[in-house]
Image (cartoon, rainbow, N blue to C red; front, side, top):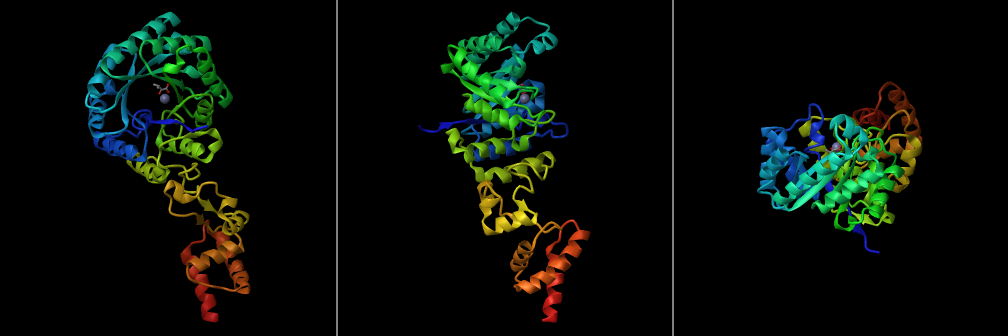
Length: 386
Ligand code: KIV
Ligand code: ZN
């Protein structure tokens, strides 16, 4: 069976940029958008045009700069939002309006003080208006993670009839378990009569650390678009991390899925977003963290030096990292020490390494990490004795 494509919808510039302190100016947004296109993302969510003149300008400029990817702008199910978004997107080669409304009873009651029927009407009207202004419309059923399934299915059916062709099922509060989110997708695939006219999209938040797992579960359940951000940045605990879902799909051929992302550009992209947004990536972050290809304990180092795949399922070059690192700490062993000496141009016999190892441990117990300068100092003492 041929592999099926999962479209990658990047929302770093919209949901990601909502992180306090990560606000970007138009120039920065254009630079990132061009790099996202080079990375191979299919859809770039450039902003929320009605939210501010600056965001309108960013969406407008990105629409002009991007030549292959689809460019989208977020709106509420509000006439003016949709009209303004269409204006901002007017020069895009492939424009898409991303409109929607709350779908859970919680949102319907507390955010909209409305009934399910009123929400249905507003959703249909928003999609019809958007569809009159741009060729492609994505509908989001906000807080779908907590929505009643039968109502969600009605909402999706009605908005597909109104002209939307991408159905975003957000787990807005990050509350779903993977099997629940998968079931939601399966339920919609099986209970929405016109679902063949649309594709389902995963949009998961990371409040319980499940955003990546949920997005993959959603794809197993039938979704063919995943919404995500570089480094997983986003509201509260963040969104699904682009680099994680892409590498899960790449590393698990049994999923029978693929993306068009050039994975060798993942690390440079992560660094660019981190630098531009001034938001550090946690060192142990999957795929792009500083420690993701570092080995520091003796047992792991010994195995890794015999055969890298003993402790690495991703080769660093696959994601654009230069190499794996053998980090020397008090937990490191002799083989790691010998390896690092060899890299510095020293070759010691077994007895010498044994002696040096005792000196090394003394230093390692004081310092967190033993560096090349420490090793040189030790090596030179041995060489002067010889
Ligand atoms: O998390 C969410 O529900 C969203 C929608 C606005 C798409 O970001
Ligand atoms: Zn979101």
